[in-house]
Length: 172
Image (spheres, rainbow, N blue to C red):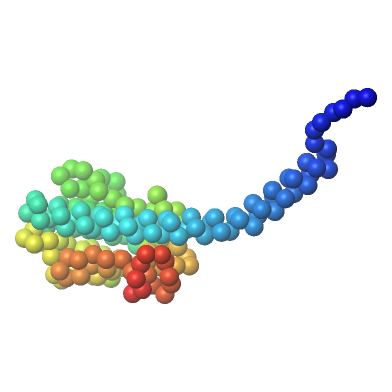
């Protein structure tokens, strides 16, 4: 008598159907987590860009501009030559080096609202890194949740959560 060991077709079908069920139930949760992580990463990358702009303004004694382009194809870039368009490659730079955060790295995130004036720019002054007259905010969204990056006249940058609880951020 032959003693063969292995899986029957029925056992294999049951195993595959259970696996498909688990993946289909977990997929929306994974997408939600990914969107949440990208939203936080986009806001934090922009936060660090603003911090770099302030530090550069102080250390190099130059005015540094942060240009922001809102919408789905958003970008934020630093410039030591004044107003620039961050949608054009290498137009915004500090000492010839492009410093830009944009939508390409954060496909679930868009900029919903910018309140930095008509040109959507923030300027850090060369003396103390202040943003007097250029204070404002940027609202990042993933369609469900929003994070707001706020720049004060004193040059302080902070992030807060708008109408939702996003881990680690105080409500606005």
